[in-house]
Image (cartoon, rainbow, N blue to C red; front, side):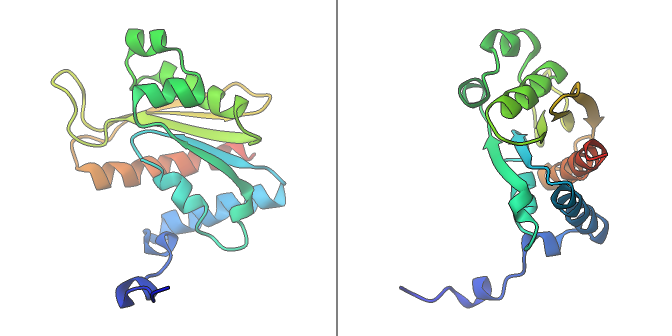
Length: 177
């Protein structure tokens, strides 16, 4: 087996490369989930698994993370989460209704107590679509899902994904109460 390249060997954790407030928020969510013996899951589209990567990056707390569904395509949302293709055709894959269906589907298909689902346009969208439009749904067993909509604007994929993760972590923190 070969040794990792020097630049990879010295690489820090992804969570350590975040802005300080977001790093602290990720650590706080994981710590609270551990203290309350609650398991977390994600159902992600426009973030491509970034939220799951951050939630599994903190040593000593990553066991609070149960699983992730990265459902970038419409077919993945249907196949993996049971989102009705008719709902996607009617409302579009980037909609509050689809985010809600993603969260509920992830709860049904996991052992998680809290699920955060996100779907949106992290970059250039179609001619009728709004760049930076993101829909969130946070579901906790026994409670109605909480929905949010954000308009991050045409700021570039990385900036939109980072702001999406920031809001997702905030919603998960609220669901822990």
